[in-house]
Image (cartoon, rainbow, N blue to C red; front, top):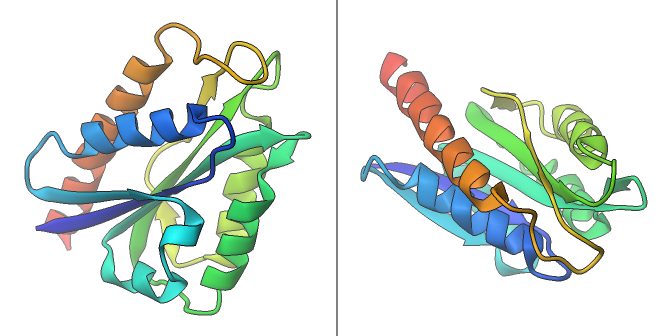
Amino acid sequence: MFKTIIVYESVYGNTKHIAEEIGKGVDTPGNIQVEVVKPSEIHTDQLLDYDAILLGCPNHNQKPANNLVKFIERASIVHPECKIGAAFDTYTGGNKGVALNKLEKIIKDKLPGIEFVMSGLSCKVEGRKGPLAEGEKEQAFEFGVRFAKKLQEDLEAS
């Protein structure tokens, strides 16, 4: 069984909903164990136990949320290698992908052992506290399904 972890930061619950929907999508093949956690719920050493790592957070002042960035910095100490991954964010207004692009760069710089197997996902939130824009949960679920296919292809090829 393949193991995937989704580590997310969420202030108003919108990014949590996206992380959970991605998790449901990743779980669709039935042979992938998925855990969805906040950075405070996992020790960075535990990342070594997973085949795939997804990281996501809301856009805070045009950058990724600090708690997730700090988690990534701590995770760089354990050097997770040969992992596949992806990133996601939530945003308001016209800020689609702003935090996501910066998050992907941080991950590539701090966790070079994680190979991105697909483009990240950026989900719109209506207003500062939400709710999620129409169709975003479905988009997150489909993102998870696509990620699961990439995970299976990658691990079966190796």
